[in-house]
Image (cartoon, rainbow, N blue to C red):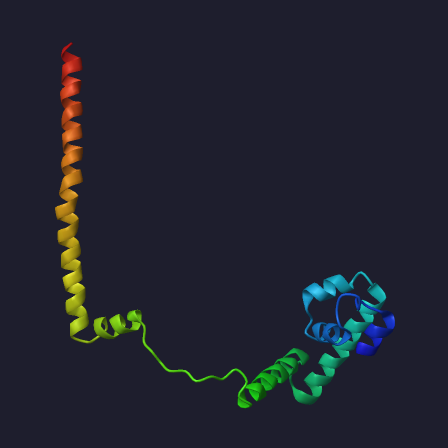
Length: 152
């Protein structure tokens, strides 16, 4: 496929030929859509991919995209085994994890939840009394104003 791509200069001004071949094997819709501009080469590549899919299904009982994924993950695994990307890490729990450790305890957790709900209840009705009084005073004023206007 790479030879065909290079020979036909099929999108090689934007992409490497090997990458294009892999994208065609993966049946990448965006690349195939761009490739349809050169219908002849596109059709040849699609035909090669179909033959490859038949062959891998018949011989390996899988499909080409799965083989590519296996190779990618194998490559990543080999890098990790070589120590690339590893570093010393010391675990240090943050504040959220410390709080979680306390509030998710079997006995203490429900008690903390009930305490918080009680405080929320008290807070709502004690602080809510002030705006409630303001609303009552406003309606009282409107009622007196209505009576005054009605009597005039």
